[in-house]
Image (cartoon, rainbow, N blue to C red; front, side, top):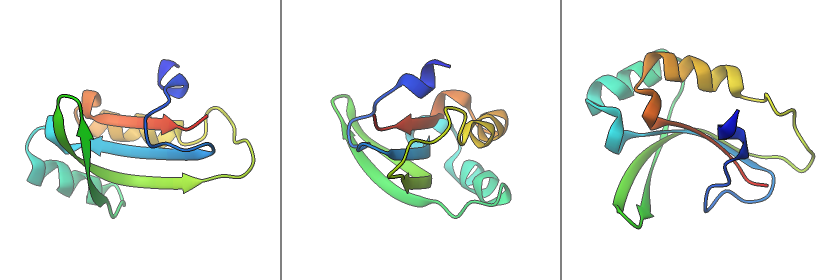
Amino acid sequence: MAVLECVKPGAKLGQIILAVDLTVAGAVDRVLAKIQDLGYNPEIRHVNYPSGVHVLAILKDEQHSEAVDDDYLLDEWLQVRSEINPDAVHLWRGK
């Protein structure tokens, strides 16, 4: 899938990030409650994009020294997308 090819600024080599962009997700209270219902304890980060500052809920931020399968975290990404505005859910890999 195309999302696995995305290299996000700030995602370092071996880093994998599963995040929800709260700026575009919709009702933040509802989205955060749903994230917690899914079993995540998100870390809130602010990211400065050329279009402005976005607030992200980081669900997972992992650093791997060895290669991981291309489908690693894909099931979780799909599950979160099924519950929250899919345009707001990101799976970034630093390559």
